[in-house]
Length: 232
Ligand SMILES: [Zn+2]
Image (cartoon, rainbow, N blue to C red; front, side, top):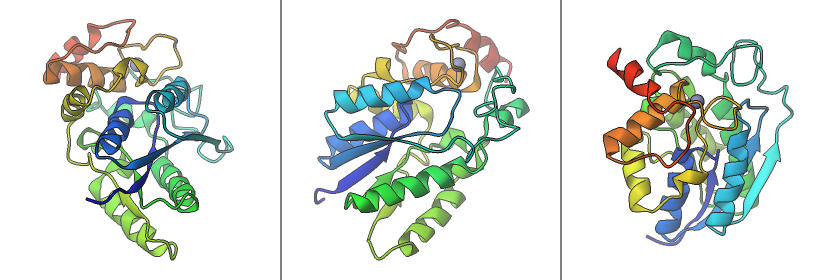
């Protein structure tokens, strides 16, 4: 495959970190884009910057006016809505949805990718996201890909290579690629140490367990996920 110029939408979470590593591993010219949209889990952006340093790639960070994705129903952009604890399959996890977030973020990434002369924008939606997040589902990705193909004269593509991968598959790939998971951030809270109790902490700890590895991150509660998973 020829060397491509890739822009990775880098949240600072583990999935996009592995995506970045995979793109680098394939020998592509990689750029990363981090976006501040007023997320409660703002600490992930510090990790995105560290990952940029780690992989020695250009990292661009842009800030969206916080009103764009603010939502009265979202625990991720409204500090008055509590971050739910438990398993992603639970109904209360819907409060972690930021309505239409990915269309906005992908759209911005496509614009930046075109400006940089990139061949592709990569984003790290995975199979575990499908239940809760409409903008991580294959139908959404396909619709965005169709729109991206029509949005400009540039031949830029949107790719979501983890769309049918489980989180455990991503951990496995990341371990193979020696991803520095200790400089990724997954927790939905703004606590200094990851809580271990929110849906995304539970999912991550379960994924490391399923893949057969110890998560190098520090957690306030490293055991909670087991009781939650047992209850499913
Ligand atoms: Zn958490």
